[in-house]
Every structure is written in C-alpha cells, then in structure tokens.
Image 1: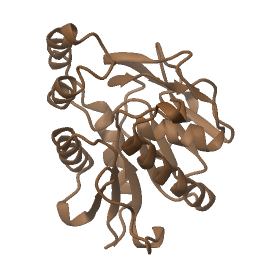
Image 2: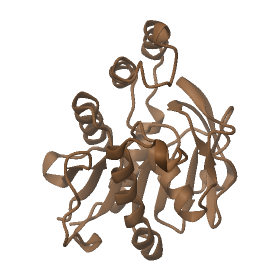
Image 3: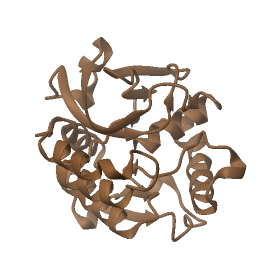
Image 4: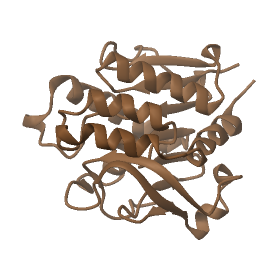
Length: 247
C-alpha cells in the first residue's frame, strides 16, 4: 500500500510526537501506513514523488506565513519554504492534502500571497463553535459530521477572504473560514482535527511563552480545554484517511 506522507513543523519534540500520535489515533492510521518527516530536523528526500503516497497531511506549528521575512525564526522559515515548494504540484494535480491549522495558512498564501494576515480572525487557545456551510453538508469528508460542532483552535493569523478557487466548507463564530477545499481533494482546516483536551494541555504547556496567550493564563486554559468533550472534528481526519487510503 502507499503510505500517507505526514509533514510536521513543530521544532519541540514533545509537541511533535504528541501531534504525530494524535494524527495516527484520530485518523485510524497504523505506523506502517505513514512516512513521517519532521521538517525541523530533515529535508524532504531529493527524489520525493507524490506518486509514492496516498495523500499528504500537514500538521500545525508555531510559525506564521504572515510574519515579515526578516523576523522569521530560521528553522521556521526553512520549513515554510519547503511546504510552499510542494504546493504547486499538490494543487496542480489536485492531490489529496489535509492541512491542519498552519496548513490553511500555507494553502491561502500559495493561492493568494498576502491574503493571510493577523488583521482579523485570530483565535485564542480554546474551543469554538463551527457550522457546516451548504457546500460542507454535501462534501464527502463530512460524512457523519453534525451540522454544528465544537473544535479546538489557537492561531494568530488567518485567511481574510475566501482564497480564489476554494469552496467554503465550515464557518466559525469568530473566524469565518474554518475549513476550505480546493478542487476535489485539497483540504485545509483552521481548527485542529487531531486535537483533544490532553493534546491541547500538552501544547499549552509547551507554547505558554510563544505569544498565544498570557503565560499566567495557562492553567485556566488547560482546565477549559479539559472540560470540553470534542470528538466530531477527528471524524473529518478519519474520513480523509478512509477516502484516500490506497492498497
């Protein structure tokens, strides 16, 4: 079978490992079904071909595509460049892609440079209400998804308008563009489909000094996230895997 290519952008090992295992668990994937690459540690293989994979899953990370080039952390800048270099092939071929949080920024920036900013729609760490749009209700990845659900978010930047050529699948109460589709197979979410309360607790502790929230609010945010019972978004990830898994 062809594995899924999982590209991770988190330089923090604990956060990266936790995200990786969450993607496996929530996506219904076995270790043998994936090729994991931590882009903070290694480059893509020179001979990498999308033909070798069932699909691409991009995790989240602390970087922002809207940051000024001179202000980017060198590792985050290199990671961003690698992901963006893949996008022309992915979008031209309409290759199965699931971008989680950072991945929607990458898709939006690729389609319309400058459209991802911190002007509006950033969301503090926590859970938000989301709704399927009419187009979302008919999308195959939304099979079994309630028309209203809650999801975990936490991001400084967001797409400000619907990127050209995309379909709006999920809207939110504070950030309107929570999930998009380009073509038939390229997807991106602003929320974290792999996340649960335990995973967000781990991230809150690791990123407490990264500007997402006042550090002194960490314990309150952890309690808020642990009080949530969120499972619907993971079905989107599982549906993606089930749809594109190849023998």
